[in-house]
Image 1 (cartoon, rainbow, N blue to C red):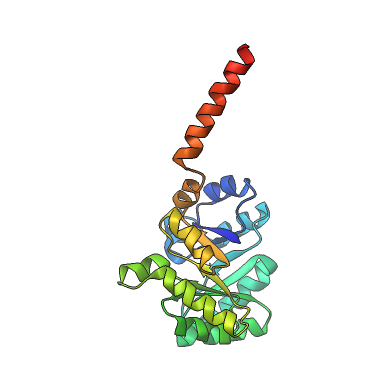
Image 2: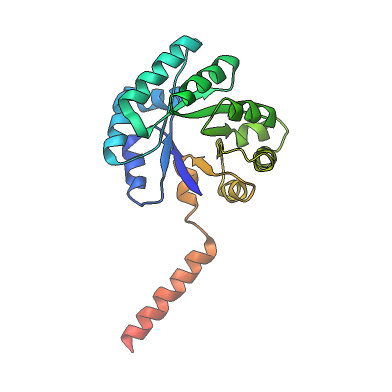
Length: 215
């Protein structure tokens, strides 16, 4: 099981990366815009800090995405995962980059049929959007399960990277249903530590330890 952070805030990523619990980072143009940083400065800083898997999204025509994907893969080498949309152009680019040996994350997956096409195009990861599927009256976690079952039945090596996860419960369920990776907003990752019974248990242990020391 791998956990990625879904953000382009470098300082926040690095603080959490120091825990040893974070395996990678996913970014997109919206997150980069919010960071106010040049995308490649963000990628470089993360790579230098030791982050080994960074999803870098490309946009434009198929030729533009292919060219930019190859440039980024050359510049950032093994840490680069090129992120493309699940469109005819995006899957064409995926196929071209996969032939080069470049890792590709096919994003904006909303049904199993799209995940099948992405796998055939050579994707390293497919990113079903759990929360957005839920918003449209279909189970996002059921989609993860459907993709996992299909991949397992046909021995597909493409990994399921569950995205658009909005709560801690869905993290556990996504892994239970077959996700290989969950990419999380920082606030969701932080809440994974929390449980009221852990807090109460720790409070009791602290109290008993203090009493034992006095005696």
